[in-house]
Image (cartoon, rainbow, N blue to C red; front, side):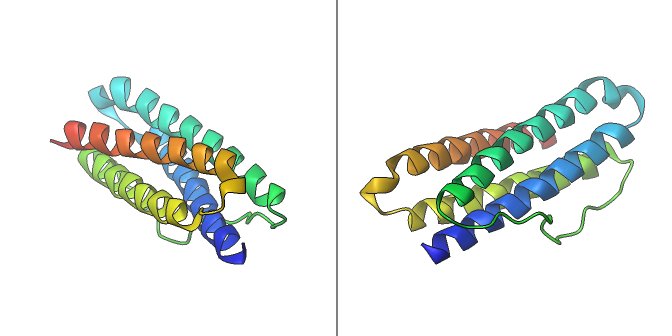
Length: 137
């Protein structure tokens, strides 16, 4: 159970990082690309808030203590929309990797609801990866 909570806290750290990054990019995108990308970054931020809430509650339910700090991986400031998109793709790929690893830790039949919730988040991350790849080109 301890390893499971540790993995879940890693996922939570990454979601907290994503919230900050997407909020930063939504605010800093300039020019004509702002019309499309600011709402997209805000949507990704909202999704990360929802994922963080699910993971946080599951950690508590398992008797763990959720982290409050984001993953220390740097959030790079840029005004270049392609760099923002590439950093976003990197973030989505890492999130998908973390949720895949987390699914491997959930083995107990008593944790079926947790497995379903994490699987839904994992699939959401995979959809975001595919969307980012299409946008980046």
